[in-house]
Length: 489
Image (cartoon, rainbow, N blue to C red; front, side):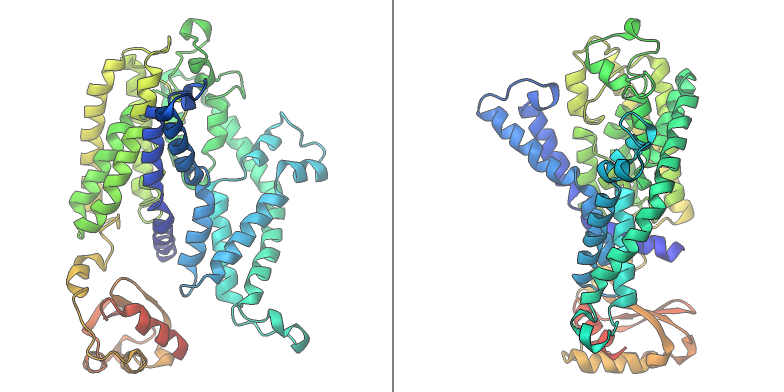
């Protein structure tokens, strides 16, 4: 399971790397065109540019789940190929159509607008479903890419059959989700109603579950309870409508305010801790600095969160708990701010002028406190438990040196054949993958690996992380050797 989650985490890194630039574009856009957030007409060149930047960034942020479909499908497949991406996309389109509110309400007449079930299916486009469809695409590819059909259907054999298989699997998955999805969604709505009257503790629990549920996209259920008017709360809608706590039955803004110190200061500090503990600091900084800026400017934290939630889930649980703790602290300090997009500096600036805003200056001590706590906690836990956060993957420590390695032989077929023989032949290989510079073998008998023969084949050496694994150091041309090796297997 751990290997599966680590591979899934790596699969998400490609789509995650696209997201920070979107957040920056949206932050600049909101600054140039406040009307995009606050409403009103878009006038003048600066506002038009800002409007376009917001829409450009939102094009990917709002469709993040589709990026996950493709990234997971390709990353979880046995070899890099476009076919699993197509299969994953086919699965996504199938699920979105079959579980749309229009289709569901037709086959289940009791699912009507205003019910929890209807609300659940209106939120079916989310990262969890994207990851699920990506996994279906990868599974269909791994399982059916070599399928041979009867002669009269031979055109659909092999890789052409993969997307068809993914579509059939998606129908089965949709039937299961038809009953499971509203049950889970409804349970979370009930949880929200249960903690609604618990004041500061309730706000803290909400913030904790809000972050904890992001990996499966079910935080939308809680958001609808606390931010909108599902049960008569509407913390967000009332805040931006210009009301104050005197107009409602709770401290207006209490379900949003605690996110500001965490997103603006806590996330950048946690990113700094990851960079400080990274073996390959350059690679970690390249990703994490952009995610930190993105979180501070406009509160887009998904690029940071998806970079480690699957490879270090216990750390992610602690991360979610810190949101809950700081939300409770924020409640008692009287700091109140709201957001219409997310808890970044842009929303803080605009919401500070609203009637319900209070003690805005407290963001400084709260932010400093969050930065210190997030950094210390992340640094200590990463070191203590050796979490594989960005830059700490097993191969990263030697990547820079290994990138300078030159193969002794540029005949990739010959190198692959020599390496395969040196690791005990085809019968000794259970699986093989590759990273930036190494072939990563899962083997049956570690005694069958001949290190001298590996070097004689043209490789630079062998690393043995365990009895069931060995890594052959190839250098930057590893993909070409891998491609030849897969043919032989």
